[in-house]
Length: 78
Image (cartoon, rainbow, N blue to C red; front, side):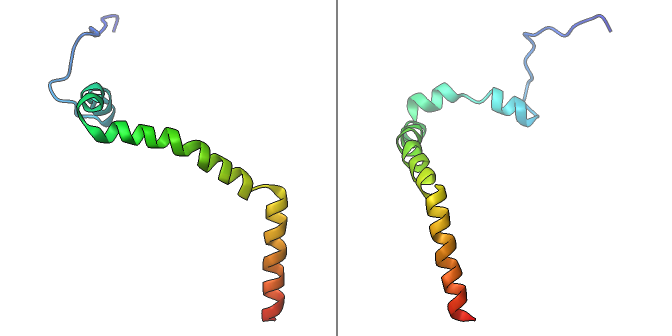
């Protein structure tokens, strides 16, 4: 068991999902396809916006406000 497998050995075909992810040509697709560029740009632009919206929606004041609104709606139905 002291023999080690050489690190430069490559699989003829990446059978496992991890091997497929590792061997995927990310640079080629980023360089020659439009979708990955715009996808990353879209995430970079919208992530702060959605973070800010989520922060405002889940604020304690807003949660309490909507709790009161739902309580009033339930009282009207009963």
